[in-house]
Image (cartoon, helix red, strand yellow):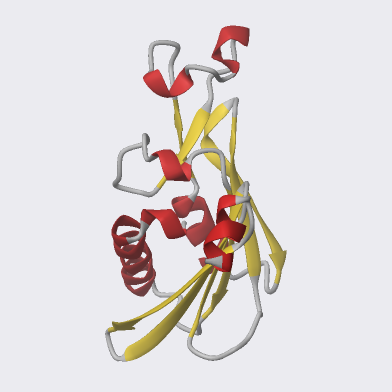
Length: 159
């Protein structure tokens, strides 16, 4: 009960899950914060990289940056950008009501690649991603992304 009350009051929500992706067991740790989501991906406890992506009210492409780790390794930034993919909403879009649309700046919603832009639990959140796996192959990264999307669809309140 205390954890539920803390989450209702805007506290941190934590969700852990794993997935067997190919021959590798991958662990995921998600921390839902008031205005952001921190997602750790790895096979062993480490924090070797950190990337961030967020929507811009002026562009449908998220702004992203590597904050920690090897800047030549794009895996974390790429995953953060895809998870934080923005969808520009027009003035007639119901997601715009109550936003900056009346002042000429449409609100951008955060959505997962391949999903609709109107997922209400994903709007206006910064995405922090710590990608701590040696395998940065694009096919493996797609498996990672799909496992995250699967968990988000099954437990949207955790994200």
